[in-house]
Length: 137
Image (cartoon, rainbow, N blue to C red; front, side, top):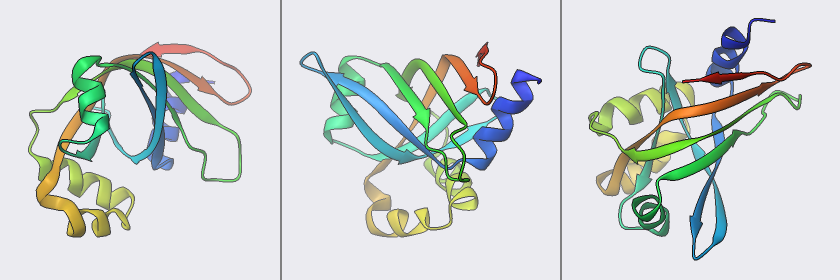
């Protein structure tokens, strides 16, 4: 098994992550759509500005996520790293997410003017199939 190839395959095939943040010493988990850019080695997502998630990430950018399996298996990615606002144009992020997950267009149509882009970087990743391994992106 080539761990990098497995990681990139799962990031292409899976379209949601359970993103964990912290507030007042308690974890908070949300399901978000995402896009992984293999050239930049970053995970991107868009979120509504001025919500609890943004406040939590601003106060403590350390985060963790796991992909949500959508193919009838239990294979998934587990990662921990940092999430910060991205300088990439919002439309680049939302267009990439929509290409991967067409129903995300509904979110963009409903709250697009209030979305801001985030990126996850410097993550330690564990890719699961039959074997576990670690990579950093």
